[in-house]
Length: 340
Image 1 (cartoon, rainbow, N blue to C red):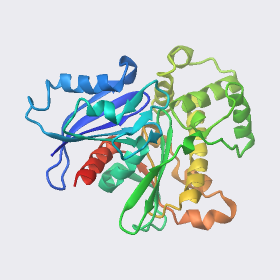
Image 2 (cartoon, helix red, strand yellow):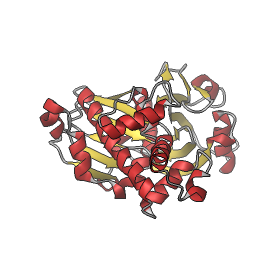
Image 3 (spheres, one colour):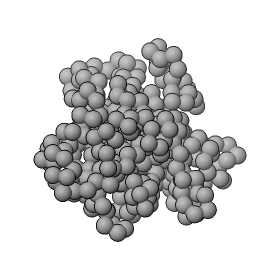
């Protein structure tokens, strides 16, 4: 059985053709695409097949049973033949019916990207996760995922007695709540350009850029102007990451430190709302790239700083996910589950 799976974010679309014999999953073809180079998602799918010289399913002698895409945005009518999603931070609307017109014999599924990631947790190997807090894990407990990338994704996966059932949220767009004098100063800085300051304004690629600019202005720093501040907005977060990880740039390091401080705060909030005794997972594109600068003890201390709920949070295991294909794998696993 073949499944076309994808992880569709604001910046990139990652597609892969998966062969799924029995309980195994084998990637046959995969490719990454920059979304700004395409006017619509259907063009991305067409380019994927063009690259691998698959003119049609029949000509390639590959019977694709399903297409399943995890998309960064709220999905209307999920798990149905008439699902649609307006991609957050990208002027695309993806509709299952539109794709169905090109893939008549295949099942089409659209999921929230974090929902797809949650389905992929069952296949996450130990080598692809870093223990941030051991906690007291319960396999038959809830799970939660906090994923800073181009935006901030949050999902809760509830144990229903037989399996984990994920449901997507838009928690990243909830209002940010500062807890220290420095965070209050940051809040005032962000309010200059935003009517509402959300967690995503701090915990995302653009958020990391916001943190860097905040410390740069605060220190009246002019260094690294050519390398960082003059960059296009989409390149800025990666430059801050390199400056912190590879060069120890003091402004970038301070931005990363505050990023993890705020991430621990929101991780604690999500944990209290979901009680994920089977694990709270830090996923997305940013945490793995900054993991060398993560102070585990400091993060855990800030995560636990919830007054009377300290004991409850102390039992929750926390893992940092290093598998950059978990969203695509989750989409493929979901499609197989639906078909079978």
